[in-house]
Length: 127
Image (cartoon, rainbow, N blue to C red; front, side, top):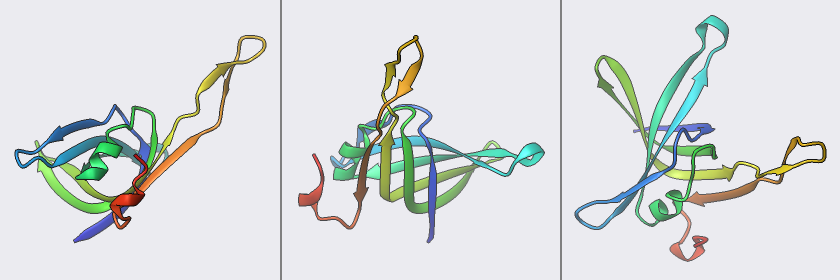
């Protein structure tokens, strides 16, 4: 088993679905840049969150900054590596709301942080 931790911004809103057995699954895509200059590249990670955590994770929206730790699986599609993470732990930070500043400029407000650890008891889930 390979465990990985990544950080990045969600590229789109989370998607939620259910299995035939009734388990909830939420999915995100997170691009992560590596290197710099000519050698910079972007790896895309497909993140899945299962069970009660999926209901919480499904609230994440495009632009949220996330840190994800989980089990890494590397597959291949059309000759390119496909990275998938089954999240054990994640933290999401909503982007700062933008407000109009004097003179017409935009000013970022405070950030909101939410996290979930798979080891937490169900009674401590904040929803």
